[in-house]
Amino acid sequence: MARIHITRRHNGNWIINLSVLLCNLNIIISKSCNSNNETIEGLPENWPCEWNSGVIPFAFNFYSIGLKRLMSIVKRAHSYIERRSCLKFIELNPLKAAVKTNLTYLYYNFSGVLENCCLRYFHNPRGRRMVLITPVCSLPSEVAHVALHGMGLVHKKRESFNEAHARALLFSSECHDVEQKMMLFDKKTI
Image (cartoon, rainbow, N blue to C red; front, side, top):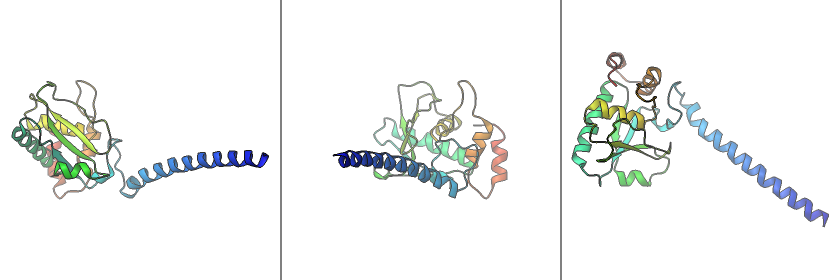
């Protein structure tokens, strides 16, 4: 009888040890991506490792009202960011993106209800990051600002982004004309 009691206690410890091991393994796996890719200081804490190359995948909600307008203003905003940074945006098919695992991407949706242009809307750091474009967001710089929120940049209400964090995000990868792009960034247009 005593042997059964010891075995149960031993099995209980084994389960606890396994759960601790799995938690530590999860931390090691999540950090290994960043340690191999030389994480740049100042990037948002929820910056996905797959974005370290400077390529930001995105998709549109094809069921959104005003889809043509949404696509037009988002593509102008992406061009606006690409001229001022080393980031590159690639469009994904939303149906294919939704079924991929371990893919973090911006998901643009038009909202005819909300009136504020400066929104941080996504909740999960991995997967689909909702970026809501409202009727008052029509200028490329405004939509670019919302896209940067979707990439993880935050700021206090009625303030702009922290310049060091914005610079780290926008120049997180190498590009051929970085000096010219940094000059455009220094004009404080985002």
